[in-house]
Image 1 (cartoon, helix red, strand yellow):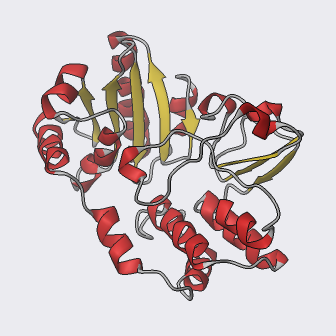
Image 2 (tube, one colour):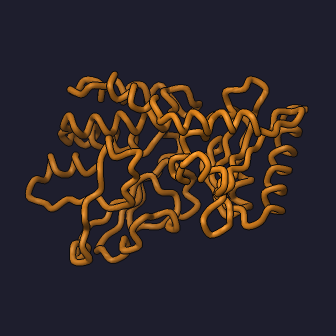
Length: 279
């Protein structure tokens, strides 16, 4: 979005704010944004389902707020909303909007938008991939960027993540119906020298097992509670996330757990959901 606005409105000051995630710095980095930059500003928030997930809490200080997202619109914040839950990604929505209204795309914009679509569709493998998704991705591929190098970078990860994957396979709990879970405590993360953000690289690991249908990865936070990453191959699990301070897509959601007992409760709900769907 930043690159599109810079290209089409060169007289405007366009900044991107948010947390700089080191593992994603090869895609783009955030700007330093001062408080005064929000004065009389148009603020656009993308790919963020609800306000607690917005990185910069100054977002409400601008003059006008736009939400662009593809998650279920349970938190309808903003003055103008462009939400399409049938889209594979916010990148698909932004690209479709830009092409529809006739805005120019730069090679740099096409590169990051294509990356967003590839990432959110799991290399075009997830059910959210539609004919429209592929059509828009094909349009982006007409621009000049090294998509092969990008794909290789997306598929690569540090050796410590490979070791953590081994831990997940060794410690994965799976019931007879294919409901699975693994818990990554602070001690485990420290032993592998992996941060909470870096641990997201293994969120799809249990799904490589043919008998696993739905799974949860519980990641202990410094404050003591657990970030819960929920994934499923075909069985809807986002209602479980909603019951535990979270939400998201039907097959890819996030929740929070505030005790070991709640961890067990969430896993039991996954087991019940999978059992009901498979019997």
